[in-house]
Image (cartoon, rainbow, N blue to C red; front, side, top):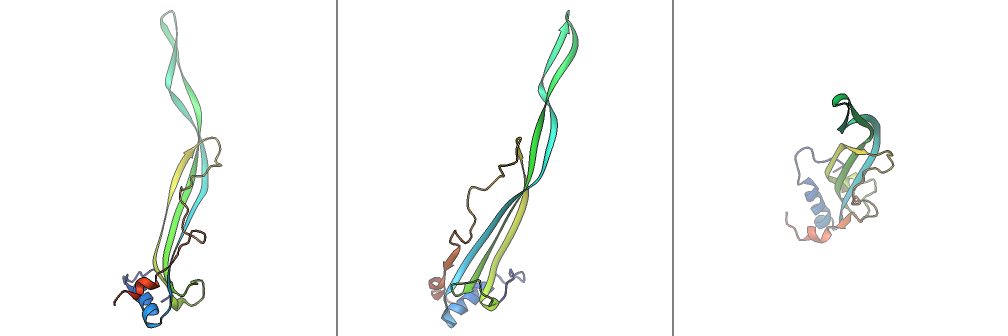
Length: 151
């Protein structure tokens, strides 16, 4: 029981617990997936970049000087992080305090840096999809499935 990610190597423990709640205790069992995505601005960097084109000026056939243009490039660093967890719990409301009827099946998190360019940093790089959450219907009643499983 409790909220650990099964780091002891027993990947079947959440399923065994859920089956017990369903078959032995005749309770409804819910699978909940939750996710979180964040994007935060880290820093802005400005640097001068020499152009690839050059312009040579010559007088009377003799080269006098070569001219390169420079432009200022503005880049923004973003920290993008994604995390999710999957839990099973007895009943239809897994927000209660009874950790003995709530088991964490999996939890993962990762992060990376993303660079964008442009004068303003108002447009953060955002994923196209919506993460699982309260509005996305991340709860699934798995009672019927568990009733048909044998130990």
